[in-house]
Amino acid sequence: MQAQLAKLDNAVDSHDILRTLTEFTAITIAQTVKPYCVGASPKLLVCGGGANNPIIMSRLSELLTNWHVDSTDSEAISGDYMESMAFAWLAHCFIHKIPSNLPSVTGASKAVPLGVFYPAD
Image (cartoon, rainbow, N blue to C red; front, top):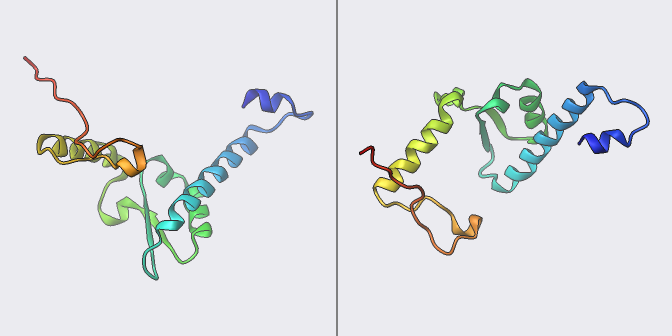
């Protein structure tokens, strides 16, 4: 990014850079989820840092017309714990030999449980 900014004649304010990246993030998310619209009132639940960013949340609501955009916290699922819950689910799948990958997405040759187990002893 620095190389691109160096090509500009005028210095670019860091706030403009951050706002541009925030807009890019919101547009990318909206374009990615739109094909998964289900029903007349689809819902997008956001977790992680983006859920705490009022600009991202506002832009997602504006870009995803007719969608209900909210944080996972609104459904009693703490966005702060979503990553740990995902890893717990992957561990559950590994222990019970449940495939947890999507070959159509990852390009893997088959569906398999992900992860490894390293005993403490």
